[in-house]
Length: 81
Image (cartoon, rainbow, N blue to C red; front, side, top):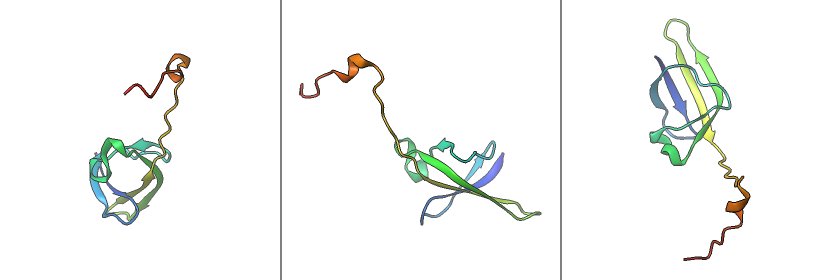
């Protein structure tokens, strides 16, 4: 397990043990930064130090797009209630 510092904007970094370094573009969720309702996208990974390694993972809010792929669902009336 690696100790990673997840950084989002001006928030304090969230320190977590993670099994591997997330890849740029990967979508993750952290309860401390909004949980599952606000997924985060990794946009930078910074490795610092030699003896005392520090890994910072910079994230931003992921844009969530919901697509209706089933044509029968897209025709449903939304004004029932």
